[in-house]
Image (cartoon, rainbow, N blue to C red; front, side, top):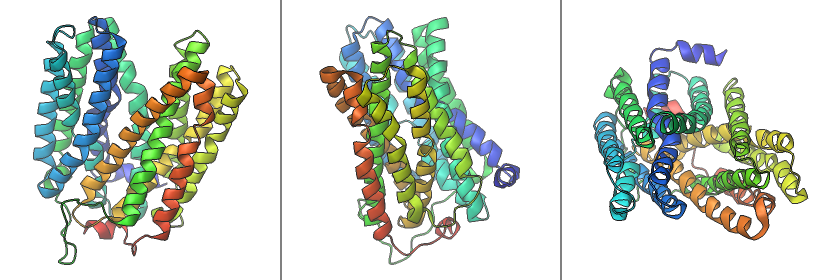
Length: 407
């Protein structure tokens, strides 16, 4: 079994554990900020703007930090960014949201922009730690599946800290977990020894870095639209719960979707695929598109059954983690040498930006026609995403393996 071999490989369990802990704030940071601001008397309008600024800052900062990693090393960039981001969170806890609105936005922007790019860094390390592409494939799949746990566990921990202790303690929790996980990850030998792969003479990297190669750009664009669908689902679930007069149902719906993605990711990594990631990525994106069709049908029908919707979004979630894992592997074989971390960070950023755009579009649709109006068109962005990954396959550059790309 590949997972057994993977987890027995030296450093794999410590890399996964430390990186997972350090990334928990990715799922809890927004919730911690929102709960702190609303409990401090800040209205939902301003709190929403602050969390949006945090998300945009994270999306902007991620590729910048990724490029810094590729130009230097992982450890200094991760440690400095973790400390600066922590300062943003801690400073926010001492700000009066009612009287210091500019300071609030300054703090969340610093906290978001300097979020350590742990996800991109770990995926750049895998091909240096593992000795064959089958294991790299399984590592990417397992990592993508575990990412879904972050979006389940993170918000629960942040909400628990804010409710059981104090709203500001949620910010302290995010800071402590981020710094502790980042430091632990940076102490692992392959991380301290990591260097970006050498660039050949013909691979001159311009100021735009990994962008400009059609296959890479098409994959990144596809994830802008995949992120939009996820953002639409988040608001659709909340609106569905409001229509049923049960706010807790939104967490149940989103949890079902994340659990489906976790199952899909683990299953995808169980056996190596028969084709290169860039070749079967359109099939996975297409499966994701068709997976959301039942959700759209339920929304069109105006059904109010929670079990039915949970079953539909569970099915929709199954192809998500495999699609993400395949995209990361495809990018590792298509990007220019020496730009791996940055291109991985770009993928994360595109999902974040798409998520924000999808949430905005969904909010407008819900305001006009309820949750059904948003859910009915949730498949549309995935049609474009599938087309983009198909074009990436058609215009791919000659393939290398993930292991060869790292050498």
